[in-house]
Image (tube, rainbow, N blue to C red; front, side):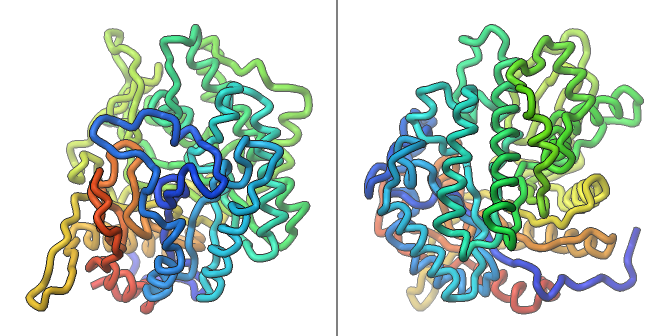
Length: 474
């Protein structure tokens, strides 16, 4: 459907960008912070650890001032669980509490609304040693952490995100959480029991938020990628439905409606992987939890075919490019270009995804990640000034914002857009050389250089986009 006249972005639309604590802050084992799972794991070969990252812990005022210069209406960042509660429960690190107090106040000084992610892949190592998300006690610890955050910051933070990309922690548990499947007798059963504990933690946190902060809004933040069938064969259409259920709808059906997706439940039953840790009252708690909006991260769509008998089950990556999930097989889409790091680019799929999510759940949507990782290069212009030319990032974001505006014209209720990322940070798998930010951070993979901030071309372009409320994308 083409629109003769496009609807405008709402005046109150939250333009901004995103980061996560362990990827941007640095000060990983100082200032009272305890170790997280990200601090104790072995970094992928050839990539640096998170000890310094982009050093935002010491440079947040400079970074927030640059975000204000771009015109941000919101800044999506996460709070490090281990910085507030070094052991995951109990003792509070007051210096950590003060850091986020200062960061929130600095945002508000520029009328930038904090959009706080409560958990972003950085479980305290002390909790991981006790079984991590596989231990039901971790859900209770998350509620304790939530209560602390709501108590400390709820007077100023009006928008909360529960758990970042819970579906990726389930579908790619080996990669994201570092689980060793070779030590598990039934990996699917373990992973989906872990998933149940996260769903329970999320539901309890949403209920608690509404009890403690009646004026605040809270929602889930999965990674959503609409799945296409590889062909018009009925079997491939069935495979796409299967993968959509397992990859996307399981998490949102529970967050919004408090129910387990029936397709996934049937598959778990066939795999002898039904979670046995569901206790009386759990489902009632999940049904009572009502999100105010849906946040999701979008990078690309996925494509599925029905696996053949000789296909073997494999673990997948974030793009689901090689995943065989028992009743669906991820395949490459030859109709889509790819980034320098091999991720498919599908702006029209962004509109498709927005329409499908809104049709299923009828809640306002905010995009909490969307971006292009690339090998950006720092150069000097004729006057010796630092410059970073990233036309590929501008092209990527322009195409996605255009499709988002079309989705609004389709009737989708959008409340904000926060690309990944505000500043360059460490990619979880590809290190610092994979850059996403509007703001260049002058460091290399292992040489920290001077960490100075440089405005990329995309910085000035996004500033113009925000000032025009999304109408000037040239």
